[in-house]
Image (cartoon, rainbow, N blue to C red; front, side, top):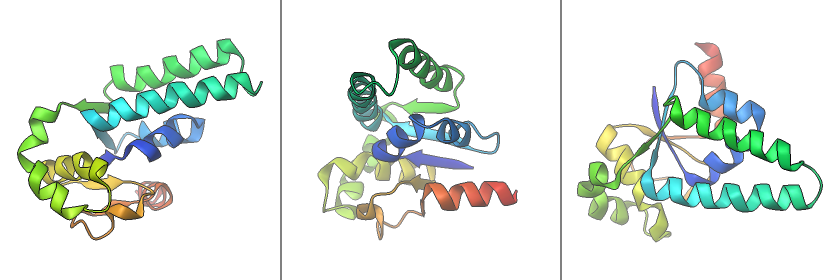
Length: 144
């Protein structure tokens, strides 16, 4: 099963051990649009920095977290798809998500792959692509 991950849900799940386990599920292929990965990577660094500054993580724990995130990408559990693959669907995707111009890339990628979108963002509702929440995806995979 292929799902296109939205940046915000990707960040949230990469910060959690349970989320990383979900994203590496054997029956799941997680892809992310290049623009969304750039946003997610920036947010991950920012949030991990805040967590370390608050004393909830040590520098070593932060380093291990970054390593586990990059291991998911290096082992292709999460695949970053270059914009050239889905750019031909950009105009259509922009029309389908008019409320947030930054949301076009996951929609374009989902259209190009005929896949659903893993998101917690209501702006994707009604875009014409199936949407998954973390909870519904986890329950679906647990049922096998």
